[in-house]
Image (cartoon, rainbow, N blue to C red; front, side):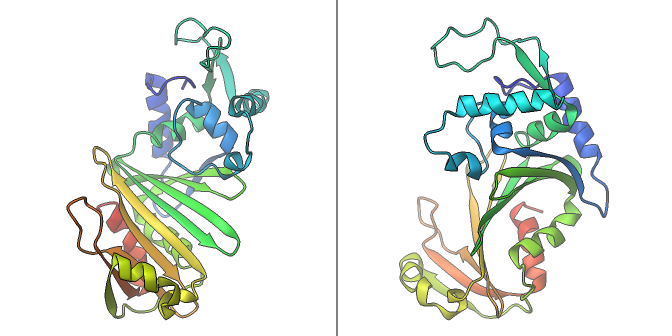
Length: 275
């Protein structure tokens, strides 16, 4: 995989396929862990990131190209990338703003596979959880035969990639959504207009004591429709806020607040992926 293009070579596709082949029933298989700056330089500085890069975002005023080159030196020293022939044409002129290197790079399959899979999924599920300790992210990339690449992003900017069958997702994300294990049974549902919810949310007893708030979002290949659900984990239970009726612009005009049980918490991520 080269850093200046999102076109995939036969070896890139083969690396992605081999990565998915490591998905084993009943197991979560770790593939590789990369940092923000390693992700950005390998994925291409010119390509917008679809995931959080918290450490890199915190470096206000930093030259991302320079930070990326430092990361690349480390990857080269560790043998995780090697110099390769640049197939992107002539090197860019100095000062042109084009960060294409004069010499290309090629990553080992353990890195190339996940980087290809995160850009070629049939559906993507994101989960951003906020607690007193900060924010934490999980991204789930669905592929053929219901195999999943997971990218877990820590506040430190480390991205841990794992693969597993879709059947493992429910239990894995249930712990992320409800870390205290407080979800018991489905309960009552309340409906609000979006304006009512915005005004009353800070005072709603169901939400006021939330220890973890997670925003789930799902989008499918070929669609620009993003479906979002918020999950509030409290000391007394778990509550879900969903969009109800939608206006002509596709935005929800009503929201529902429901207490949910453990089975619903487990089912929610899979439902958002359309399974």
